Length: 106
Image (cartoon, rainbow, N blue to C red; front, side, top):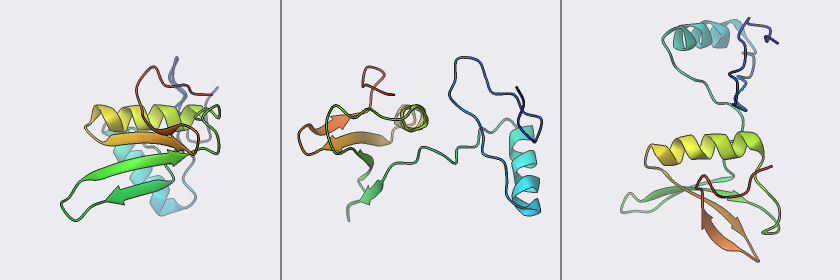
């Protein structure tokens, strides 16, 4: 199945780009995807945290440890973690859990 821009989702991936909402987004979307970029608009974590010393991390908050990450959240955070961004899931009963391929999703 293809989206409105004619792009097919990749097999084995939850990645499906969100359709641009205006002509400027559509123009940039076409430029970037035409040059090999993958555009993520879904799945961004709840908190982006920065300390004065420059330390940076992203955190997805869940009300319980048993609540899993959505597929888009998991995939995006794995991509970010692969590029050196510290990514965590946090819940009151589970605390901070680093995002790794073994962390539960959907």
